Length: 446
Image 1 (tube, helix red, strand yellow):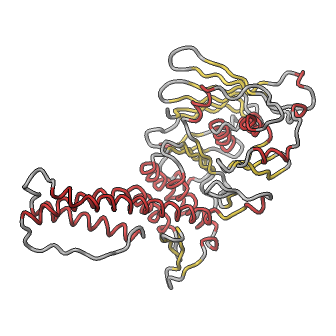
Image 2 (spheres, helix red, strand yellow; image 1 turned 180 degrees about the vertical axis):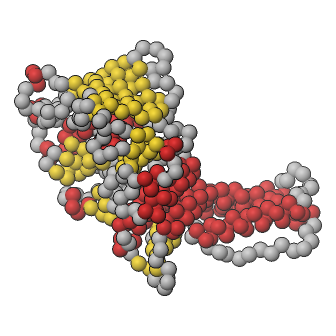
Image 3 (cartoon, helix red, strand yellow; image 1 turned 30 degrees about the vertical axis):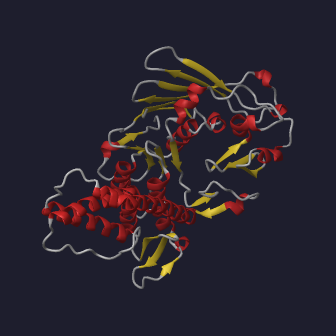
């Protein structure tokens, strides 16, 4: 299912917003004056679909509705807790009441309540011993290495309470119907601060201090790309070896004695040479030797070349997805960078070089705007699964005006290749440029 619209009622106690999504185009732009809640809306949608209910219940909203294109509606209402919970609750946040109204059939309901401190009968320092992928980064805050998100105590106990042998959780776990609806619609929020990451793309996090885990995002991403290249080339090599080992048998077992025509073979060979050249330029393959076809090809040679070209097509197909993403990534990024350029390195993932002397420089030494361009493009093309709704908060930060003009065309190219949908909140008329057809205006109610 894909999201069709978002409805927010009484944001900050007074603002009502209806946001129809531009699903066909893959991009919806939210704009409006400061204070209308653009960032709050993105954070609420992110918290809902990533099941961070503790963060959601603390937001100043009366009701949130998300409608799906295939029919069906999830409504979340904020409900004041009953006074019998006493003064020892962890926060004054309200309970959440979830209603699902399917396109057909009867609806369902579930209430999420927070955790009372008196229900915790164990030391909080023991939590990350029983849940190994959690690392405590604050008094009541943990980093989840599986999602690279921070969780408060409420979220930890609700999500991982079954892994803690002592202590009790308040209420019941998320019902299957709600977990399925939310999990089937992945959402990722790119916040205004995006140049520093906590954690490691491998999912391994060192303990114990948060400041020790603050790493430039470009450093994480270059290692991430190096791993992706290694895995893809290993798959390519294994598949190539399996084809090469069966080549003689497949050649001898051809059912038809007549092979392809001369011009067909030459055209296919030229196309494959161009394809391979592109992969060499990107940095995936070495140049290798060039095969020059003779002027005259007899039927036997045409038959052999036909099978050979089929194998090359199959082999290169193993590289197509990564190559397409790399080509678009390098095109988007290197059009923006003036004195440096970025290229792919199979050992190190990404390297930056000066255009004048081609001297290698550290990615971390690039300007904030240059790093941000790399971080956004790479994250969208390589880190998000197809079908993800990506929420982008204030993309104009650290971007030169000329780069802002390219933002929407670049995002639409990424949406098509990576099969993503976007909602971006912006103040910048340069970001919108001439694409007011993609916008939804949020009023301040004045």
